[in-house]
Amino acid sequence: MKKSTFFSSAYVLPKSNNFNDSDSFNHEPVVISTWDHGLLANRVSWDILTAGGKSLDAVEQGVRVVEADPNIRTVGIGSYPDRDGIVTLDACIMDYKSNCGSVAFLRDIINPISVARKVMEETPHVMLVGQGAKKFALKKGFRETNLLTDLSRKEWNSWKNSSKYESIINIENHDTISSLALSGDGRLAGACTTSGSAYKMHGRVGDSPIIGAGLFLDNKVGAAAATGLGEAVIKSSGSAMVVEAMRNGSSPQEACENVILRILKMNKEVENLQVGFIALDIRGNVGAFSIKKGFNYAFCNQKEGHLLLPANYLE
Image 1 (tube, one colour):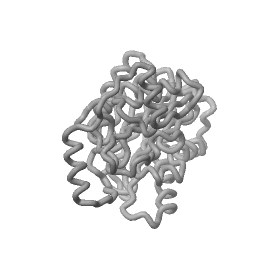
Image 2 (cartoon, one colour; image 1 turned 135 degrees about the horizontal axis):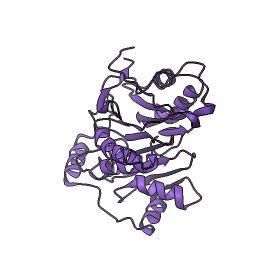
Image 3 (tube, rainbow, N blue to C red; image 1 turned 120 degrees about the vertical axis):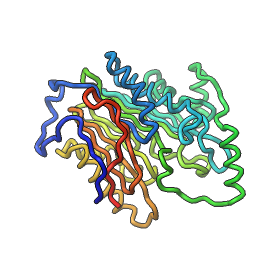
Image 4 (cartoon, rainbow, N blue to C red; image 1 turned 90 degrees about the vertical axis):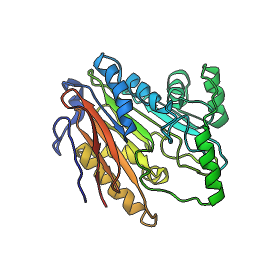
């Protein structure tokens, strides 16, 4: 196991920790997000949190900025398309009451995270997919937009000529944007949004919109979110397992490490496997861990300010 910088915003929880009195903790705002573009998200989220805003608003508005940036190639507009040249987006969101909403295989809508929130707040369902998700978004006032930029189209045409479909580990600083926040009133929220694997099979959906895989939280314990190969995260219910490890006494860092080891054992046949997790507990401690070198995350609290940190990694 190899270590990069690890930062804890508070103190590491003891193994015997009891979360039942979490409502009595003195909370300070914290936000943690995946990858370099997590800094962009965190700045928006932090302004909301320090103004006394809700953690749910903080994570939604933070990742919306990333979705709307065409220079970030794996989230929102300008993303890599699938094999058929079509950009499809996945997202989910979850609040401190365990309310959640999700969209998958969504086309032509820049901000799937906000559609997911509408699903959570204005329907009896958790997930809408494909044409049904798009129809719902348009009904709620979202604008139809061509998500395939000229650059993405050019690169897709080049990829077609090479006729290769290979997974690439650690596309540097370009992956799912997952964000977890703790507000001053002790309420957790999480958001996850992505366009999925570049040149994936048409119709493929990864872990990002799946509650318990790409994102999970329990306000008595903590929150976790994933990045990397979605199929491996789905098979392990990765984010839910990180939260359960924290419930059983692990620190956020230990919980991420334990689930990464489990995923690696479950996927011994997968070459160049890369998965990473971020975690945040109800007391403001954070952790991050990945299989391979290259995963980083953005962090902010009142004491340390905005930081971009390399995650510890296994191999």
